[in-house]
Length: 245
Image (cartoon, rainbow, N blue to C red; front, side):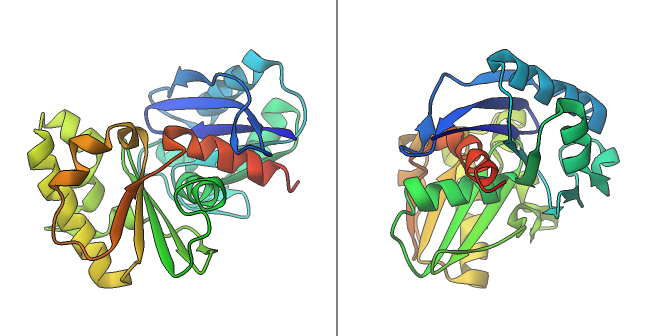
């Protein structure tokens, strides 16, 4: 069965039809740049462009980089503040003329990884971290999601952790992989102290290059693995949510 998923990020908006029997994209994904400012209306236009590229009609899932409760976006760290309190489900449904479900981006990626990827069949406490413009998190206890954890906003040395350990921080500060890995290790150690996970799954675009940084991270008790669905996990998770509409 094919469903459609769209993943809104701080840098790009990407989407594709998803084969839910295989847990993989059914077609090559299409991406547009996230507008700046990333207002609700301009982002909705970007989502419409992605959906229109495929001529998709019918239900779809859309991820958002922030807390989402019953289709309402509660936070907006890497997009315009106009998203705070926005009924995103209604906004996007009206813009597209199709049924839409909206969920946190890392939660969507985590559900996909737990079903089809690196977390498949794992019990205990599993924590997926998406490293990109910010840091998203999805926490699972015996396969059950604890939604909207947003652990990228934990304070680390006086800063939001994502301001120090995201991929954007590495790129903006032109950090070497070694320097960035030290920062990431400190963040993982902090999260491990709070949640004692059995497994860390590292997602986002950087999961395509695990050899660059994972061997440099030491002193963490939990197993650390790259996301198997890599940066497509959010799209797959969004499509999974759409299948429940």
